[in-house]
Length: 93
Image 1: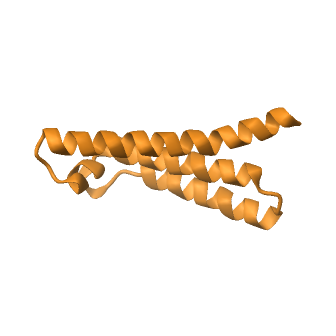
Image 2: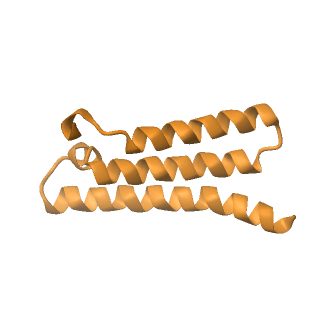
Image 3: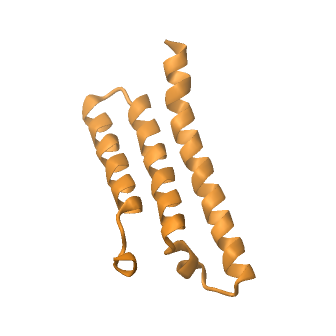
C-alpha cells in the first residue's frame, strides 16, 4: 500500500521538476539567443515538455485524491494538458 502512495506522489513531484527545468531552460535560451521568453515557450519542444509536466502534476494529484469526483476532474485536466502540449500549433501545420 505504501508503494502506491510513493508512486502517486512521485508523479506530481516529477511533473513539477519537469516544469521547473523546462521554464529555466527556456529562460536561458531566450537570454543566449536574445529572444523574448514567450517566443521560446511557443516552440514545439518546449510546449510538449510543459504539457507533459502539467499532465504529470495533475495525474499525481488525481492519484493521491480520495474523492472520486475530484479524481476524475484531475484526470480530465491531466488529459487536456497532454493533448494541448502535443497538439500541433498553426505554425506546425
